[in-house]
Image 1 (tube, rainbow, N blue to C red):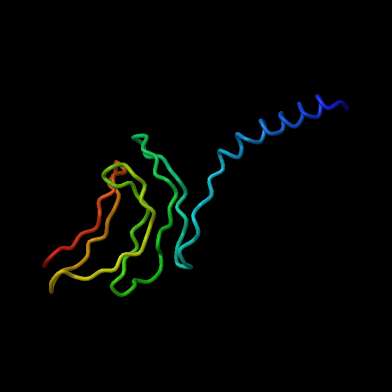
Image 2 (image 1 turned 60 degrees about the vertical axis):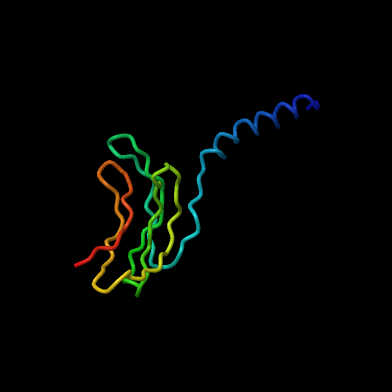
Length: 112
């Protein structure tokens, strides 16, 4: 087999593998044992919700898991733990959630 044929086979193998490489998306490292991976999905409106970790463990004292979401500027925010410190007595935390349209509503403090 000549050098030009070997080179052609090498280039063909790279071209064949490259599209597969760009399609593979690895999930971020698991934040802990009480998490489940939510696979990416598309809402009926066509909004793509990327894969993210969801906390399913017991409540943590003064901590809340903020799942991955798009912020108001359209940037993806990776999931993270947030320390909760009530601004005053009687306040309680209302967790963030996704609306039916996929828009993220951040958590907030509510007063009784």
